[in-house]
Image (cartoon, rainbow, N blue to C red; front, side):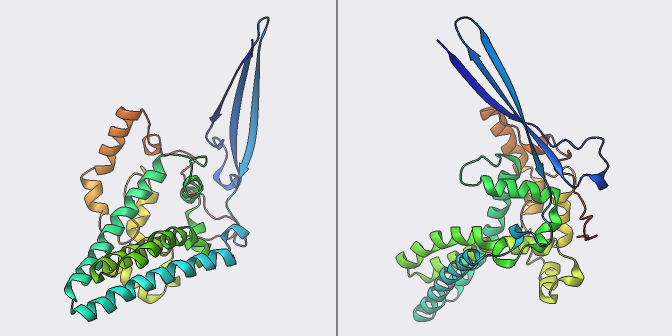
Length: 295
């Protein structure tokens, strides 16, 4: 009778004692342990798999928009426009102005909260093998290492994943409801969620290179500011998660909401968030030494 056991242990990048100027490529090690027990003789095998990770270059295809990306963004914008149109037309027809406007404001406020909760979750839990959101988790981990790359992503490349979610979520609502209040909330909430990654990219931009209107909205607190979001990329990397307006950041951080949730998950499930063991080399920012670009 033979019993085969196999498990994998991903280790953190090996960057200790390597000067930062020479850490352009990171070595990740995956250790696979296989044990086979037979009637006469146990056997064991250890496999070490090396995987190099490097920051994308400015002309990297992973930062470029494809026609598929553009089509998804167009589809998302179409569903948003349909929802907004229903809110405006329905409001005019029923002489409702205040209610749809208040619903829209609620959507804007709750979108910021939602962005923070989601950002906290994928920053702290899961990995690239997590179903559905694994790719986004891996991307956000790389973002902590090389945050300046988000400013080089083309528009549709940066938004297509959220545009796909918005398309499948908002389209059924467009078909099912005509209520102007419902669509006042839906159109604003969905718009802020879909474009949150663009707001995020602007928060990493330099003031001189951003459109004046964007800078003005950041300074007014309508969009998350560069200064506020910069705090998220400093140790201990456990605050300022919201990336729409950032209005919820102070409330969530001062009330320690996320810390409480982390404790609950740890005592109930035994899962530790990444922020408890950070900072380490995986989240320590690497400068763009190839282009001398600073964010």
